[in-house]
Figure 1 (cartoon, one colour):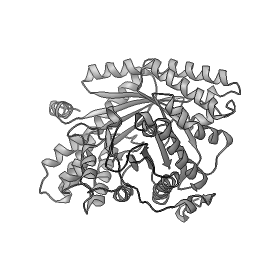
Figure 2: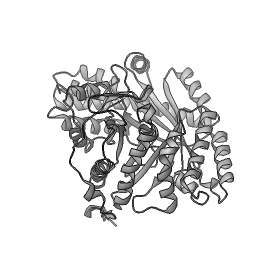
Figure 3: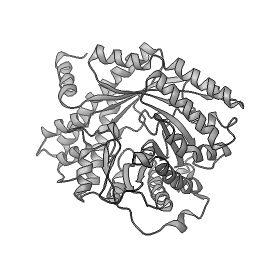
Figure 4: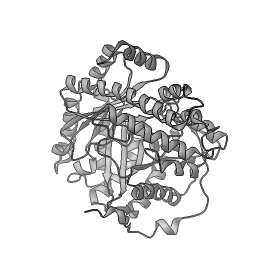
Length: 454
């Protein structure tokens, strides 16, 4: 039973420590919208989304009022559009027209993002997959709320290096297509290895084909709460530190569980998963970097950073799984540069480099996230960074992702402004030596030996 002490404690987390439910995301299957007639596909997509999600935003707002819990975003994820539009789309422009329908539907129901403009190409590309991928720059330039993702590898299949090379080019083209907004389109594009089917966080969300017709996922975040709790454990040993993180993660996840079950009941849609991710915002005190500094680092990037992050990530997951039977998505700790004031400060002070961030991704939840790089970075270099990060995910049997933003017209040390939750970021240097011959070989990097478990 919940007692009055726990109620007061949760209220304090919300009012003073930046605890929030970051998103309620409704996953919607669009498999039944497929057709060889493009007009029919678009009409079915629009009708299904606007019918199934019509009450999503009002319900989220009602739960906020009834329970006093901030729900920052209401979002939608859909079946990867390469699967839905494959039979009808004859060129990239056809897929762009579907993206515009998704954007229109998202605007109609009032969500801030819709994810699933996606292709799953870890082993090979169909014609439809390649057409969708080539449409991404224009799709993201011509829409406001659409988010895109491409899965280029997995532990079971290896890395599709043809797709990796292509995605290096697509990231550059997307940056050019949105250069008037500091290449903002790239902030809505994620390249994955081992992408999860049930991720509620954008830009990488899509509704997996093994999911139900509709489902409710909740992403909850509380880096500020963890930081405040750790202040009380200053000077204590690692056992006390770990227990503190674990107990705090448990409390945060219980809030998400309450919201998820209530949203599921009111919307009459099955509950999927809780994603407990310490997802920072540009707000003061809502930073994963500051948690790591509270643990004992002078600045993120200092020796010991990877070990501290590994411990934090593990304890967050241990606390979360005790609070809900359905913890999934990308649960752990996000380390996006532009959305975390502590990370931004570390980059500006030259404590944190791209190479150190890559090392940190070996032990955290996602990967190289929201990192601004010079606009003249070659496409091959971007592909090489994607390949490095995907290899970490493939070998370690975990999800990794890359969301790089080559800011056209800006160089190292300049600032890129993305606005809102996406924040701002200093442009970071990229290793100048070429990997073009490597990424141009073509074909696949085979799956690691430990993937063969049948």
